[in-house]
Length: 256
Length: 279
Image (cartoon, rainbow over the protein chains, first blue to last red):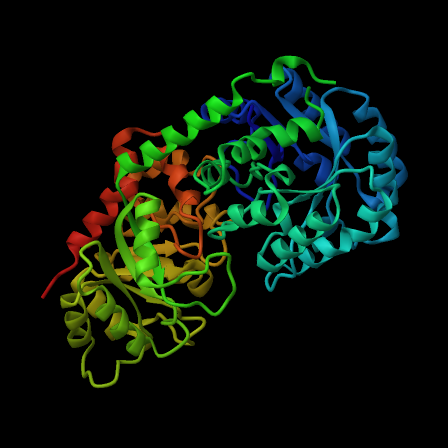
């Protein structure tokens, strides 16, 4: 089974998208042999139309015959409202996790205001997918969620499995992500995004183990093929590839 | 809780088959790479070997038959000294051509750009990479006219990074030098947010090409080939900085015809190499 554990339904004004339709996502999944995709924050959820995002997620689930799943999205500035909505969402089998993003909400990952999301993940027994990156020259908002900032919550909620989206984003972020994963058994990393460093997949496996790494694309922005090829052709064992491409996601998101 | 439809009993065999098929597809497409690098970089990375022998080994491992290689120090140190070192290194390497870095200033000891470029071309140089922002010069004629005229006359490939030039300057180059093949590379920032700039340019300029290592737009290959034809897309990996599979699977698994795949994987770059005027 192959699971794209980090994609986004919809599109954004910032990122031109050739075809954001659910039908196009399904066609691409079929073409690449991806069995299940998990939308970790559809664009409507993230950018301020959460009820529309809820509807889109349900529509994707229905149209895909249950192959496109979603995460509830939590914005700490609307905590009460988003917790209530997340509860409604998690009651539906289309929702399998919770997503938080520090950059777009401009709230540091170790801020008090994230507690409700972690409590919710604990209460529902679902993974918490977080955006992670490193300090960037040209994108200063990435400073809100460097991997080290999550340690406070990882330690406080050992029962919550946290997935560091993009595995820290860039070289120093990858090092910090791997260090966190080595230190805490509830820390995982996904390969989504444009972290294309030569040797990265092999290095992460060596540092943290293949059972802590998930395949993800960052679609609608980034094409899944840029990540899938790197896993298929990596100098790691077939078993490691199997874990990364799907089995870790099956286990974490309880897809069976 | 999800149903058992998500569980595949033959997962190991399936992954094994996908790996084998992918590797076969890569071999069949005979990748020719416009964006190879050699020499120790300043920034850290997960790759630990940067010498020519290592690069040739990587090319074999990842099914890259040949390509254009640039010296990693050329954009920071003395470009002309490092260009010379590179051309020495590749002199006996049949699979490699040289990528030079130059500025708007004539190299020491040369009175014309033509003299410098002809000598470099005779030593297997085929591409020039410019960094106008970092190296603080303009691509306008008052500053770089002599260099660009000489490149134009020789049909030498001109590679630029979009963050170094901006798209208006790329348009100016396409307009002013219609026989100069221009190759835009997405380094160090991906070309995923820029469709609104380059789509109108691809529509107008046959001499504009996009290199693939960071051209990671979802469904982008299919859309661009459908709109503008496959001839604008050129395979490049940025090896050994980047994992070549990033760009390779965008081609092997593209939903385009086999002929278009071959063009992107090697044919377009081969044509551009063949078009360079060798003195």
